[in-house]
Image (cartoon, rainbow, N blue to C red; front, top):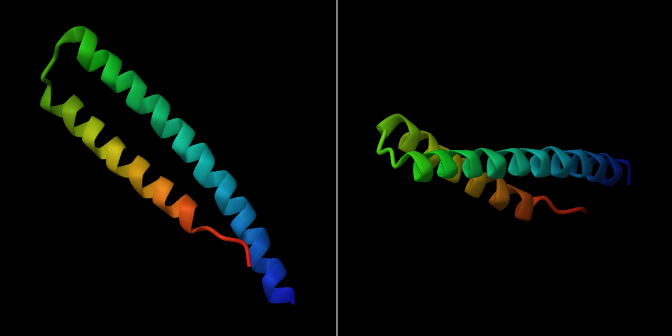
Length: 70
């Protein structure tokens, strides 16, 4: 019983952290896409940052789906 409670508490806080990270990544992606689109830049550094942010967002969203309460 105690292990279930510990697990549920851990999942609760892990979900909060993951949701905050997803929100931050979406904001970062929006800023990067605006900057790339408005400036019409094909700067490889910005494109690389954009692709990395997309991958991080996908990983966090997948992890959020996997965090289940016992």
